[in-house]
Length: 190
Image (cartoon, rainbow, N blue to C red; front, side, top):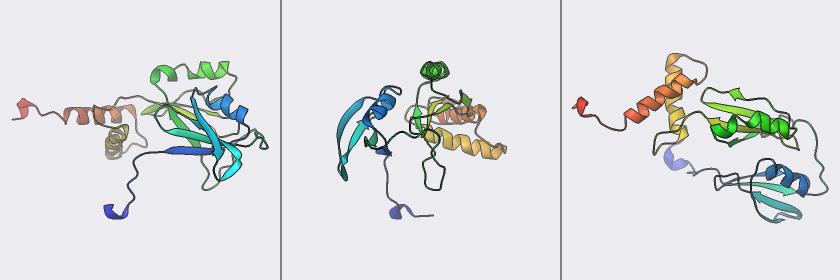
């Protein structure tokens, strides 16, 4: 394991850039289906004959797409090979999540249906070029000042001790109780 001085301190995801086909296909999906505002466009600075479209996924980060009208949309799945992106997951609220199957049906988009992942709910579908998209909704709110990752770290520890295969609702509930109640001292314990 690396020592802290040898690591590069990342501070979050900056952006993801995808290889797209035409501009209209890109706009129709990322803004038209997923509602991500199209915030700016410029040439691909490394390949000026391509457009570089920028979208806001809702968290002040960016999803960008290189567009080239000579590329056409390919139907089907993107090959799963080492180094390939398996899927992109975007966060949605639980209030949105419960309506996703109906909304995707109305849009004529084939999907997996909602799947219970223990600590979150997910639905999967493909964008027009075949990339698998996941819309995920956490089932919990982290305690004030803590991240989802911190709660999941504790839920993982609880799961491992219990000998369970995957994080379940009960592991998250136990982690939340420990984190919430472990932060504030009680006079009873004096």
